[in-house]
Length: 208
Length: 198
Image 1 (cartoon, helix red, strand yellow):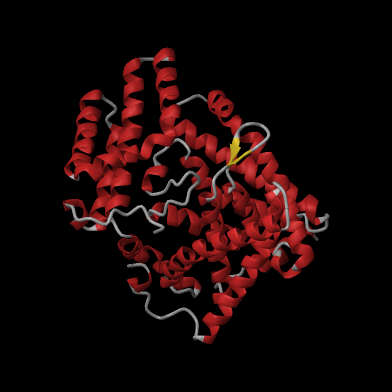
Image 2: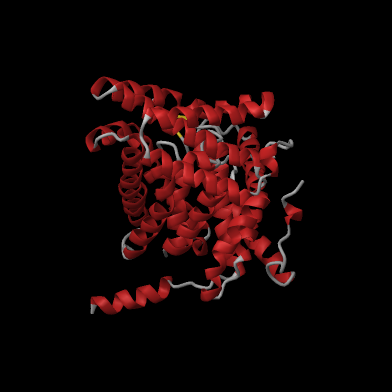
């Protein structure tokens, strides 16, 4: 499924999403405010401890930083060699903590829960004549569109190969876009036929 | 009177409130950018793998125009924050906003806005030229401004160092500028109504 959510139960899963987001925000402010090893190291240990508390699957998730490792090594060495090693450790620690903590929220909070927390923030949309829940509807639509688009691309690729199209697959971009626009027109026609955006967007479409 | 044109122009881009059809279009382009993050990166001639994501950002600006292009890319950034792994390389979640490339991601919507705006203002020029210039200004100048500033803030590097490091991505992005213009032109030939800047 198109989500990073870990479908298991942990104490973090049970915490309210708003509280988790607030904790992340406060931690990031504190990390920039108190740039000392005495503060950074305990926070880093606490972060790792939370992952540990989620068992093997939790520890496995620490790999989220893998695409960034090379960049981190480079930044660490650069900072250490040109300035000081304490600064290098602080920089590295701060980036690791924030990425890992933020990832924890993503792992333990359903998309619907996140939407519920942030939807009230969209209430100013009323002032310009739009419904705040249209944001949640767009998100659901997007989640549905992505696999459809990938399927469309696959079909175009198969047709291309069966015509011996060669390797210049970028030429598929135009038909893909045209097909996609046609599909979106059909979707909006269907939506209009049903009387527009459904009044109540409950989690039905997202919880599977 | 140039300022009269400006007023007329502002009225033209005022598309608030969005109707349902436009909302669906916005979701479609956001989904397109998301899908581009799931397709494996293409190793290009320069040896640097280019991801398609910024191509989607530039296309959204050209095809939807500044305002809806901005909203489509905002929606994409929003679902990344919600935790969908749709950023190139399967990344997603709040963690990416703490990473060194956060500036690029936050700059995406503005890049689409400027791309659309510039391409629209150059309406008298040939579509290929207008879209290229728009995509260059929005997708490269503006996006790199955000990306490099973010990189500098998060890593504490100096301006010149940050710029040098980020230049690695430049060749791939220049290719995407040309691709944006070519795609916009060929879609325009088949389906003129699909290109909002015309």
